[in-house]
Image (cartoon, rainbow, N blue to C red; front, side):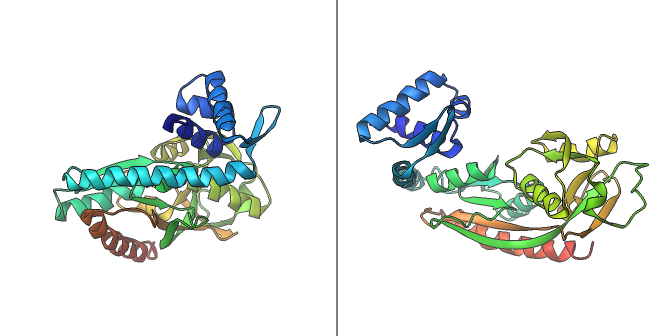
Length: 300
């Protein structure tokens, strides 16, 4: 049994799709399938239920994945402890976000007081965040989707903000201050890709209102959404924090009366994570920062 086999198994288990896993790992699908089969032979039990092209973790697979996740976490923690002793990682903070808009101000404020610190930022989906937290690859995650369904992960709410709609100039709703969400059921939406926190949340809003959104464009760059709305390509959900210190005005924002559209931004980290002194210092700084931002957003 090799580490590479276990890494491949983690990816297949997370995606439960051999083709997607092979694409993410950048290897040929037949090679990946053989690797998983050899691992199952070594263990003497199947790890997946296979039906045509669909695969799903079985009872053995779920138990084994839990142990593999813990093993990789311990390996990565061992590496970090060694590096910290060598003073190579002491001042590095690794963060993953589904809300990249919050990072420039947050990180910039901290660096003004701590210019020696180095940040590494990753924009990840929820499933990727969970995996990297459990593997000990990142210090903190800032997300609008709770990561509290795992006993090894701590989830701490930071602030709650309102989600608005923005519409293009000249749109039939441009002069409205407030609407019911069902009123835009036939409108084309500009949206983030499925799997990102805001997209999952806004899809839920639409379902609560009684419809599925018509997505005319989806991508992984939040900054593009306002530009596409300005060009008249659709409407979009935009969180209140997008109005903080913006350089260019968004199209007209509209309050959503029904259903209530809000999101809670929270902080997640692994209970098993070995934090550097710098990471420990950054934690209370984040709490104070989001308390201040939350108070400002309440005035919008």
